[in-house]
Length: 196
Image 1: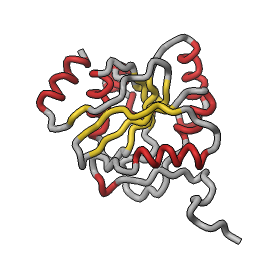
Image 2 (image 1 turned 90 degrees about the vertical axis):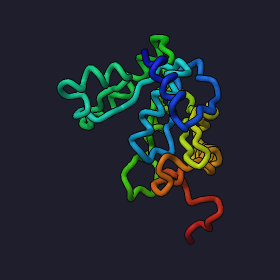
Image 3 (image 1 turned 135 degrees about the vertical axis):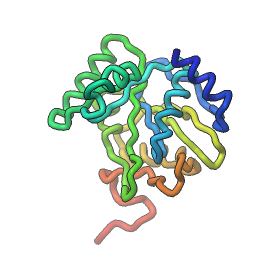
């Protein structure tokens, strides 16, 4: 069903899918720049076309009442902020079961005022041993899709340099809300002098 909806979407949309093939192993799928709720629609169209099973994390309130079954059917996993550590264990269980999926994480967010990405995607990938797939939205070219899948090295600035290089020319759906891919956990940027 999702594949049919995706086909209809691409037929009538001005957006074009320009993508590498879907990964063949579990991966943390970054959705960036995440500047609009339309990114969710684009993500469903991308993964529906590529036949990629996905899961995504959402606050518990999204899963209350009649929305719960729909959100779960679309791959949603409710997050209890009081027990957020449980998520890594659940992801590891899915990996060990042999399920191939992309865990969609949007590290920047749609609200204004952000200056850094959240590091949850990095922690989850590091703790589970999953690679990171760089999904993107670029309004300047009206293209979206999946970029490369990379293995993290544990050298946060070096890994983020690779991620920054990929997203350098990706504007997002609403370019004015784009946040530079940088984690608070990084050391000072390489081109900035260390504080004395």
